[in-house]
Image (cartoon, rainbow, N blue to C red; front, side):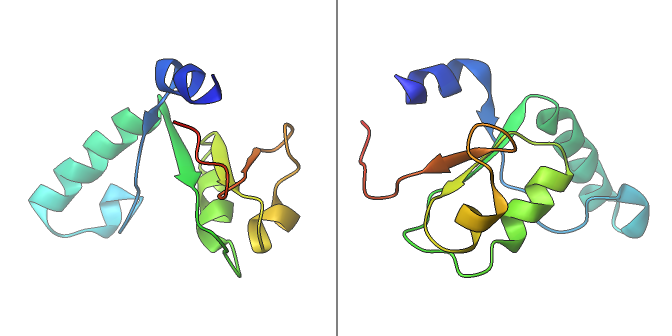
Length: 96
């Protein structure tokens, strides 16, 4: 049920590299970064690892304003207040 709700609400976005297009000198990369910004408008960050020690990607996603879904194991469990600043995922619950 949550998975279907999430599918209808957002797209899955994986963000890597520069976030600010002015930091890149490559035209193709700049174009890709701008596309990424358009996608982020309706995206989310999902990190369903069995265990995440630090959770830096979670912090970065939250800083970008993305709805954040992350494992309830390790760092993200301490970073996210479930249902307030993001959502915890139980990586051992294989929702199909």
